[in-house]
Image (cartoon, rainbow, N blue to C red):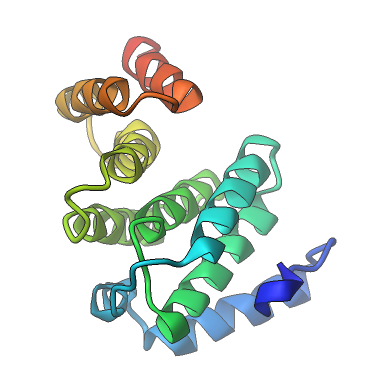
Length: 179
């Protein structure tokens, strides 16, 4: 990550977390909808790398790392442009914040993630992963689960089409059946 100019501390104290949170608020000028204004670029490998590291941080219970990785990815995209990998990063960030009890912020970020997916209609797997994270976690906290069943079934179908995303496909099935 340092090769790309992104420094992620091994241990994130409350102070460093707050510092990163303030940097993010300043960069966004108070609203995650600013992400819709980021220019689109063809290739941004750092977002792909961050997405995978962030996903592993989330599933291994390192919520602060997951959140900070999301913020760092957004800051990188704001400077260098985004590709279809930003929506899943934003979705994982929303899920992490929902898990931390910041539901209102998670809902805002989740809605932005879904809107970002529309900017990349040909990136089916990134869109499906984003919708899986948002409808399978964030939305089920703020609305009745049955409202998310159709989007989750569509995620399952889209992930079957893309192939190679076995863990996400199984996750979408589990999210659908466990409720």
